[in-house]
Amino acid sequence: MSAQNTSQPVRIAPSILSADFSILGDEVRAIDAAGADYIHIDVMDGHFVPNLTFGAPVVKSLRKCSKKPFDVHLMITPVDPLIKDFAEAGADIITAHVEAGPHLHRTLQAIKAQGVKAGVSLNPATPVSTIAHVMDLVDLVLIMSVNPGFGGQSFIPVFDKIADVRAMIAAQNRPIDLEVDGGINPQTARQCIEAGADVLVAGTAVFGDGPSGYADNIKALRG
Image 1 (spheres, one colour):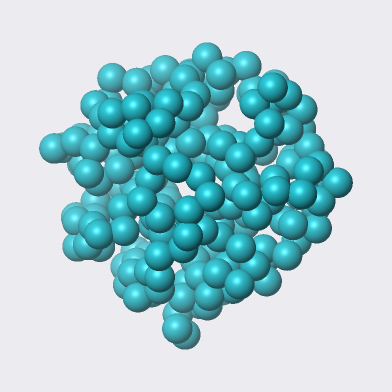
Image 2 (cartoon, rainbow, N blue to C red):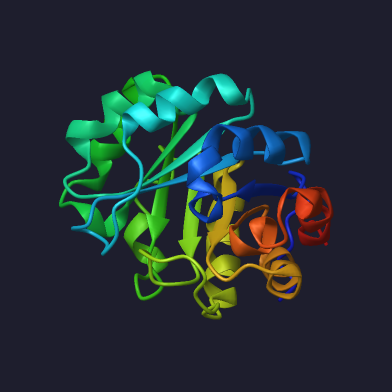
């Protein structure tokens, strides 16, 4: 694992899926103050993945709580009809799954048409070849290191996949985030960074100790 990227700093995107939903606005403010770079918002539909989480109205209500980029991960299908809603709610990055629909290129075009950054996500078993012909459209590639749908899962080693995507990004010769989501802790964070990741999504590893631990936990993940 020697594919570490040096063109962009490592950024931490706490997933509010692990926050206290009863005080979600306060939690967003707290991770912002603690040094989060992105606010990662996991949108689940109970169809593409087992659970239900946030809709666009929740994203809109949280927008006033932080000026940090809202990194909205859509684990939904069909995805295209809701892209505009999440963009208008305040998303800065909208990520859709390769597996969520038949026309990935069209989906990414629809995201870009809303004036926000476009991300594409790969489940653990999905090969990187599936995004080879859309790299010109993406601003972020999200590699899942757990199966999507639940927080608190164990990390699936996907280091070769991270390195392969890092090489694909290098060929584009422009800034593209390489994000990893699932089972991230200080140890797996270092391994992902070494493999080429530069954005790390973490839920339990950030929120597990309560607000007094958020800053230290975020710092620990930077390596």
